[in-house]
Image 1: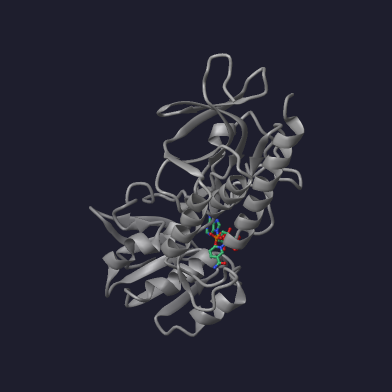
Image 2: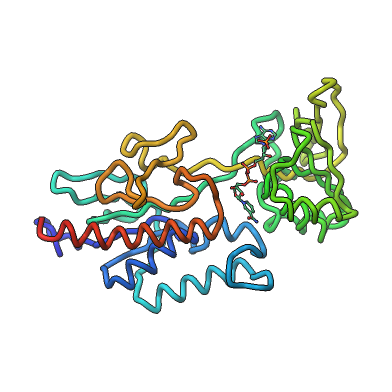
Length: 315
Ligand code: NAP
């Protein structure tokens, strides 16, 4: 289908090439829709920030994250999903109901859109964090862990990411100190057990970071005991921050309904408050953020796109 201005019109544009976007892509491609998956970088999303995956059903042994993504991409290509590398800067709904997507490289028009833009690491917002970002402060153990070979590093957070990445860092680091603000960890028990059994990991519980200090790079982390208020300094050249993620919803700000934490609200069919605009994965409000749930939500969204297009055919 083309518009009055003779622009090509996609049946579906998927924004984001993480597991949610790739699953949606697989379903729309198998429905033989004219579909395009757009990502500002290579497909993979946050999955590429980790090295191995061991809780994605179907794989007995841990699977390399890059290999898993590559399998998903190849599977989509087998059913002719189109891929493009560009940034989407805004989405608008035209009077004729079509979605108009502004990109850094031209405009796209589509009958439906699936937003799978994921989330970005949350910042701690303590003095020194911004200044030393990339100079000892990191949000990615896979990317930066090897820079701290034989050294001691601090990890902030008590969730799955902090504990899992803390264990990963022991491959390089002599000692990993996980600092968590509460006295109980939030991470899955199996991850906790692994961390407790690792002699290179120590925990400081009931403490919050107050400042990252250094000169040209990080030299230490100042932490405060939440009970006594006492402040102490850890001499570390590296601080890894894993305190959660913020959904990437900028391009739909003011367009779709969000919850108080800026996650996108959808119905059971993954449809947002805008007709034909669907969403899946970490950007969506949901109780569990896993590859398995992202893939499940992506599959529902892809299936729902086909249903939407069938119902709106000729309208
Ligand atoms: P998360 O579950 O939101 O945990 C964030 C952690 O950071 C919490 O322990 C929180 O403390 C702490 N925190 C938040 N703000 C803080 C602050 N200002 N100062 C100090 N500590 C702060 O985030 P996540 O661990 O990145 O996980 C995100 C999602 O991905 C989760 O759904 C998780 O299950 C999933 N995930 C799964 C796997 C896996 O299955 N293998 C791996 C990684 C991530 P409180 O506990 O006190 O709130």
